[in-house]
Image (cartoon, rainbow, N blue to C red; front, side, top):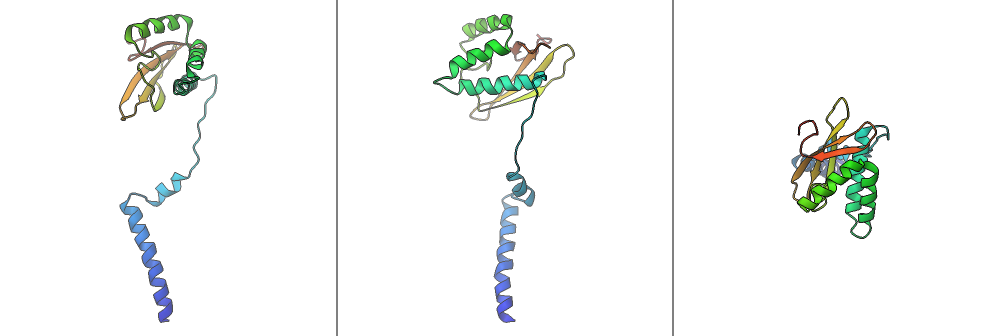
Length: 159
């Protein structure tokens, strides 16, 4: 009996120590279980918020590729932005010496698109997250025909 008790105690102590360490480090059972859960992203081409998110995702990817991204970024602009807004954007960029889609001179590490809910067109809030954790908030307006016609710090109706 003594050998069984001796064998079980170290096992119990090891399990107890591991559990206490996990709790102390903030690694509860739920965090361990969710760490391996698969992620999913969904959308549909008929949804304007999905289209805005697709544009920003593809545009940021293109701008992150210094060798081949410039041409792709220009093609994405032609596809997603209205012709009149493309002209406005070029003027804004010449005056501000920055990328008009990102409103910056560099490329963010992350982005988030949130539907702001408008009646006659789609307005989405864009949060761009930069290297040091700083964020930039933009507002993007899209027609029902799925063309972006405004990017700024305020919605088109607020300006």
